[in-house]
Image 1 (tube, one colour):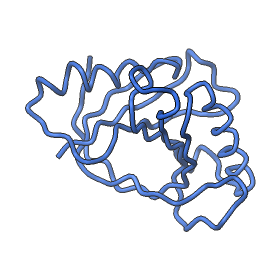
Image 2: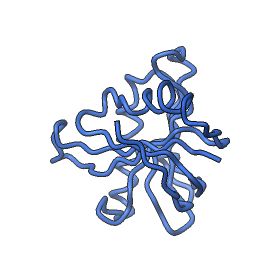
Image 3: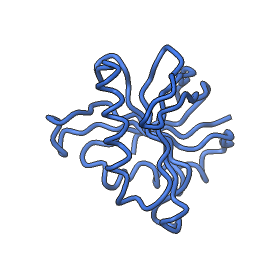
Image 4: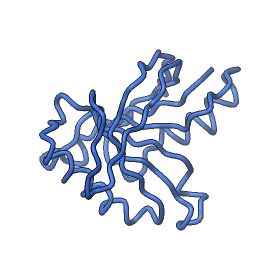
Length: 153
């Protein structure tokens, strides 16, 4: 497994919060995509992220929480989809690339369970987050690219 230490630049995002069972994430993402289309923010210029506050494998479904985000430059106005501004803070991160389906992004568990305990590093007070490198209706599962960032001090 190839883990790199990088500096992630602070990123302003438009975020929609998903609280509840992971199998309902699709509905939340659809609201964000509706907002994205209405605001003409193409994926080629506005990156897609997921901020994962807990592990769906060990969290009760009603307590599961993730923010789905799109990088933006401007403040978000009130909207019917419930999209709000948030910040992904800049700083050092361990990063790994995942190729394939986003159903089970194994580098997330590898970073937390294998790499981190042996790294000598300390975690920052921000959850693991994913950069969905390629998104859209024409991206096939086997073509998906996801970079997994673990914030470090």
